Length: 268
Image 1 (cartoon, rainbow, N blue to C red):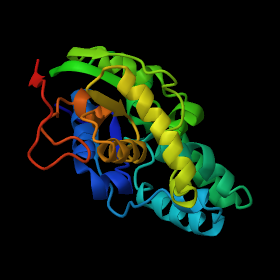
Image 2: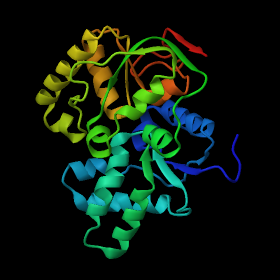
Image 3: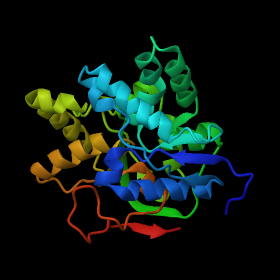
Image 4: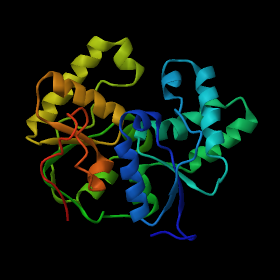
C-alpha cells in the first residue's frame, strides 16, 4: 500500500528486461511497492546506451543518453531504480563523462546519475530493507556477481542480505564468484572464442557448488550463463535475483521451456 508520502520511484526497466524477460520488471515493481514506494514506469525510456558506449561510439551513446535523461526528467524528485547493475552503472559512472564537454548536459547527467540506483542496493542502502516478506524457495542457490554491479557500484552484499530472508533458500558461494561470465555485451560477439572459454570456467565453478539455481542481478550475464548451461546439457536453472525475492518461481527459468516452474517454489 502506498500513499503521497511514499518514496517516488521511476522504474528504469532496461531494454533487455523489456524485450526478453518482463517478469524481472514485474518482480522489481512488487519489491519496491512492498517496501512502500510509489512506482511508475516513464514512457519513452529505451536503452541506456551501453552497447554504443562499449563499442567505442560515444556520439551514439550520447544520443541515447539524452533520450533516457529526457524520459525521466518530468519529476526530478523521484529515485530512478534499475534491476540491472550494468545499466545503473552506465548511468552513474559513464553518463557524466560522456557529457564532460557540455556544461548543460553534464549537469543534467550528474543529477540523473545521483538519483539512479541498482535495485538491491536501493532497497538495502537507501530504504534500509533487510528482509523480504512472503518469499520462499526450498533449495540451494549460488550467486553470480556481475562485473558492472560489483566493480562499478559495489553491489555484492546487498542481494545476499536480502536472499538470506527467503524461507528455505540456502546460498552457497561458488569459487571465483566475482569472476566475469564472459558476456560483456559486445565482447561476447567480437571475441566469441574467448567469451566461451570464460563462461565455461564460470559454469564449472557454479556446478561444483551442487546448487540447483544460479541467481544474479544482470540479465545479460544470466542469459549468457543459461545459454551455455543449456548447450552443455546442465539441469542448473538460472534466474534474476528479483524474481526469487518477489516470490516468482512460477515463471519458467531463463531459457527453460514454457510452463515449467522451478521446483521448490512456494509462498512463506
